[in-house]
Image 1 (cartoon, helix red, strand yellow):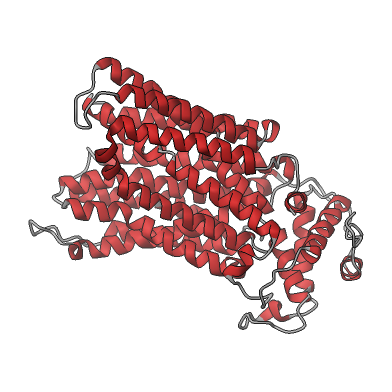
Image 2 (cartoon, helix red, strand yellow):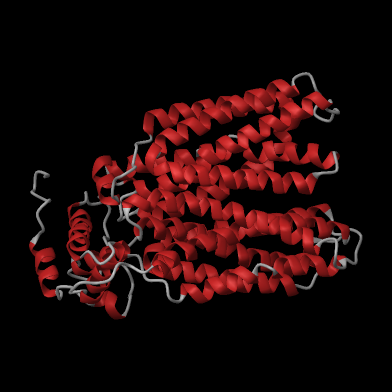
Length: 520
């Protein structure tokens, strides 16, 4: 019990619960409800992975069609630009949209973006083809990227807030497996359409194939129930406000000071969440409501409006922000794109580039699923430290394998074998730790009042640092050499282990509200 006796329901919560009708016996929650609560956000994640796989094949086809190097680079990165924009929008407006609505918006953008990419006019008639000639395709890629940003923001939020603590780790980690599955499907689509269609048709067919997932996801998202914790947040925000504050006009139920609609919908969601166990549902809803009311209040004005100051206004917010952004940054700067670059180069030279890509994808999927089934037993912190330590060891192996070899020099057979084993070890270690656990931890540690905006900042940091790392990679390789570059990544990975040991807390088996109070 806290100093103010917050473990007891306050008067508002008690009266609210007493006004609600007592629920009668209900059947256990149907499998289809659980399936949709996970399947829709997971499928949104797969559409992100699909873009990674499809864009590699499409860029190759567009190069064969005569597109210049600058245009190819722009096509490959245009979706990342869109994701940056929507991540910034999610940071500001995520809580206004709601988790389910944001997933529907992402699905709609995927459908529209995939269609626009498939029909975009493309001018490659000039030898020095300017970016203007590929403008419509770049715009279409950016629209799809908007869906990526919104989807990668909302999906972990929705799963974390709409699943019981016993399953939260498994389902959030399985979302990472869905992303890897999407990458594999993209590779397969590229392999099917690339060799069997004319060049100008093949890349369009690749992009259009995303509709096979995007359209069903859009339809299913229309039936997705809202996150019960977001409904509690809206209930408390509107009910505790004696005036509409700084947020300009929300309309409808947002302006109802008694917010019965939000509260009733939240209770219905919790009853579903706990398999019809009304007592357990009411207890957990009460805990969420009390946590919201008892939370340390931001020192910035305007409770109903967002400010960047809210993200650092309290001790718990600052602590969770250090953990979350630290993990995102270390995930991006420990060398994964660089490792895969060399692996692709080696196997492409051996004539097995596609087979290697699919093989690595399958291996990543197997390791991710293994981590998903272990995370609620072993713990997030343990898997992060284990995986990152494995990455550091494999990076040292890669550094040693490249020692004495010029950046553009040929690799011996023994070097290629050692590098291939190092790559597989690195990939496996990444999928044990950073791959599934980073966004699992991020979706758990932030206080509910700033969870959406903090995840928005996390996705913005993720895509932004990804872009920076990709843009400076070649310059680093030329300056340090391959051995030096991987040695640097190994040092960064060891620093990441120290960071995880010092700052990351264990969250397995705890409800989101228990985690919030633990950090406080």
